[in-house]
Length: 360
Ligand SMILES: *Cc1c(COP(=O)(O)O)cnc(C)c1O
Image (tube, rainbow, N blue to C red):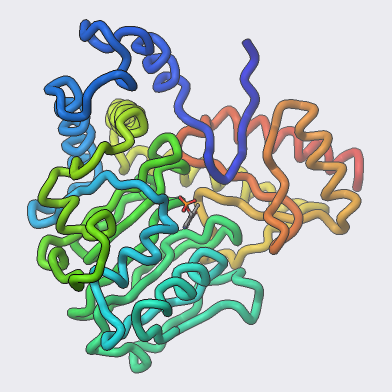
């Protein structure tokens, strides 16, 4: 067997101990005589799994008592509609910050269900920074205020969140949930597709303050209503059982490392290795504004496309795969989620140094 260093933006690398444990439990999960995939979601066996996954996540993120944790489907993209459908209405309004492709997608979809007011944008410099916000532009009567805590494509992140007063702050944390310590009590709602820092695709985690549940209009489909899912413990219908089980193992692994605080230190170290090299390099250049740089998605370019292509190709041949940047930024992107080991980043930097020496 030979595993590569996978720098994909998502679905992304998973912790090897998690994959190994899942492999050991594939045919028989903990004396149950069957795989998790074969279990009824109504069984005690599965109830233990989803209950344990939730309590581990609550503990990792220090989720306050008055928040529900939901395990849903439809990816982060469905939350672009569920958030306005549940928290607002055609007569209502919401503030959004436009920091990149994902924020833009959230704004576009949100605009179909509520009146969207964009209070800040970094489109003028191709989303290379997080805009400084002028709170006098915030709508004090907005139903919610939406941000994208980490823009996966452009490699930027909020290092400080806007103070929205009594307006609930809603964050798409798909690509940096569990990567650093966040104060959940500052948010009304957090959502994250699993396939970056939580587990396999097909699962989205929603953490929602209880007073925001139950506001959906009568025409909202049951499957899109947070109250239905909250009242049914995420089991109104069959949840993505196997994805929830892998998420449980990822949470267990993260607790074993020492939790989010320890993970944050490791992530700062990993990102520091790459950014440190980019800042010194005469050939490679980071594309994100220094103070807003992501810990998870590191975007960089070489002086021309020919070198970019050569780098991606030669890197892949050495086992560093999925480094090609998104077409809207060009160049390269190294996604170094929680599960990317420090050795993987060190090895990549070593290869970049070699490449620089040969091509300078
Ligand atoms: C990947 C990603 C999405 C889209 O997630 P899906 O699960 O594919 O819908 C949305 N927002 C951010 C920040 C992402 O990184």
